[in-house]
Image (cartoon, rainbow, N blue to C red; front, side, top):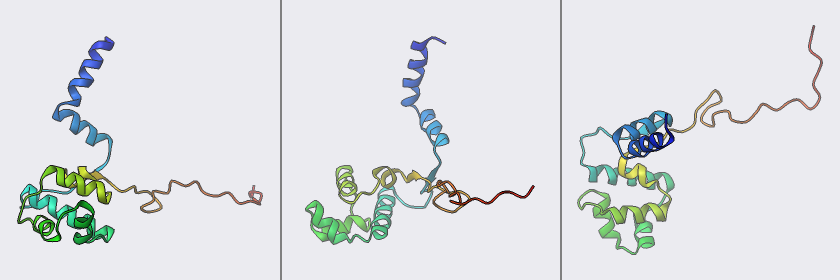
Length: 134
C-alpha cells in the first residue's frame, strides 16, 4: 500500500467513531454510564465520587477555583449544569481525569496474577541458590 494512502486512512480514522472504537479495543477501559441520568447529573456524580476518593471537600475545591461554596454545591448536586470550562478547571485543580468526568471512560486498573499491581515485578532470586535435585 502507498504510504500516502496509509497516512490518509490513519488521519481519516482518527476523526471517526471507528477510530474511537479501535482505541478502546487496544486499551482496556472501564465505562461508567448507562444509568438513568442526564449528562450533567453523570458529570456531577463522577466529580463527587472522585473528590470523595481523594478526600477533597466541595468547599476546598470552591476555594481553589475562586467560586463560592454554595454556587459549586448547586452544580455538584445537579441543580445547575456545569460549564465545560468549569469542569476543566476543577479537574486541573484536583488532578481528576477530565476524560473520565465528561465521558465515563477511564483506563481499567492493572490486574494480574498477584492482584491489582499486576505482578509487574520480577521474582527475586535467592542470593544463595541451592543446587536442584537431579
